[in-house]
Length: 401
Image 1 (cartoon, one colour):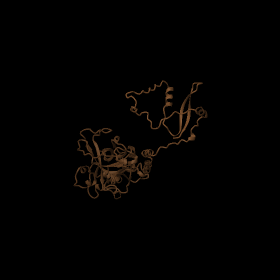
Image 2 (image 1 turned 90 degrees about the horizontal axis):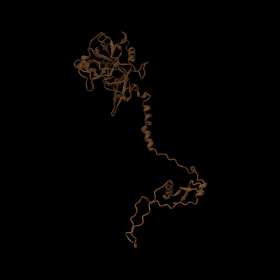
Image 3 (image 1 turned 90 degrees about the vertical axis):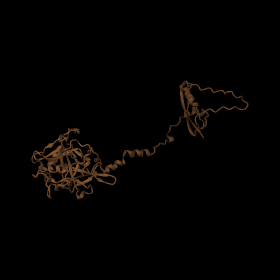
Image 4 (image 1 turned 60 degrees about the horizontal axis):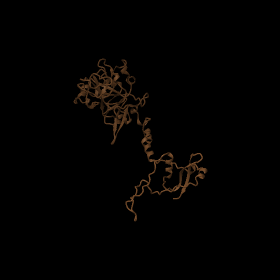
């Protein structure tokens, strides 16, 4: 089947491409385009979206372009279908069998169309995934990966008149609404590895003209050289993996029609980004230990000799052991032999509240410090009687544990 294709040319670019590849289509001037305002260039045409389609003008008998919706809706429908469309493709074998019947036989005689495209997408099925591939005609001297030549698919179309307008479109609900389908066939030998179906490809203006019924022969011709003999595949097409994002309906990017191996953001760039991904950088930063700077004792400032001389007679207060805890509960008093029970011991006088900042600093000096080994630095506050200014001295205390 053909479930996605690309046609990303603007209105003028499409006219230019058609004139270059189908010059006889312009023998009587530029073909008329019905509802050109509804057309949008699209690298990812999906079902229910609009695209340019070529068919014969019933009034002039010439080829014309019309913007149609992909997914054929029979003309007898009264309301828009609510479910998914299963008429984006039609098997060409059904048209070749006169006994098959169905709505396709009603359309094959007078409502044949040609769908121009730059290529179509197909997904190669693997055991655990599907790989998107883009199939196109080989590039010519005037083409590149961003602008491949047009390929022409055989299709059918129909026109439906709804009884209401419940499906508005960006440019208004067209009344009537033209819809189309793409005919498929067995794949060519060199592309069977990709899928068991492919679009029917028309080669050159002669087949396009004949398929549209512009060769003077109306209707459907049965037989060996009949109309159905043009419904076949095409060999020699280019096929390559492309961006998997094309599988999302609504996405649109020129990278969808470029080979992954030749894109600037292709496989090589993908793996480079994986090596420098933010998640990997964050993981490595959390796993590595933090570096700690080791301070050399030679980098510290020496104590002034004057301060050492002034503080040499100062002795530190006795310190409590490491096991003392000022927050521990008071022990229960016991009665010693020869003492009268019931006599309360004199409670210690609570410490007075701090009246000033100097009292707080003096109290901090009296607070016992835990015993530690090695060198310690103690801050002593001295008052000079002459200028009544406070001087802070540093005392280096050396103790052995």
